[in-house]
Length: 196
Image (cartoon, rainbow, N blue to C red; front, side, top):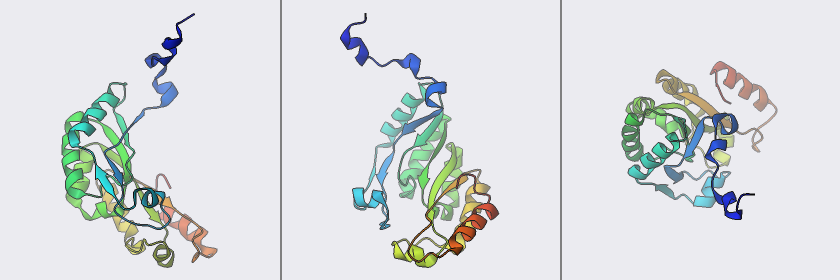
């Protein structure tokens, strides 16, 4: 039988795509500068937004690639909250030739240059917290800065740059009525949301 300490050695032969998939997690930032009242990130980080050194993130991406996949899931809460930081990070990722996805806010759509850079660096999907189509519901959870009348335009901006959008949505805010189901479905279908 193997010695007891043999159980502590990682079994890399078991870490294959069939068992763990193609996506490898890496983290560049933590927290989010917004203070949406329903969000666990806000509660946990209290509005703090921390950024790791770019060199450390690139090192972690390279380590993740050593395991046989170039697909990186940045597990950040809002990877694009600091435009200067994300621009520097994404420039550094271009030579790595990865495909990546993460979470961010719709504000990224207001920066055409950053969207182009995100795509060049390998971004193929951003998960955005749309939450609701109802302004009253957004106001009730301190997310009035999200503008439902601009959602379709923002989604189109992502898509025009070859970045698909996953929409995080909440049904059942206090101001919602029964129409929320049909309105949400219609929005998802009319905007061809790949991952609602």
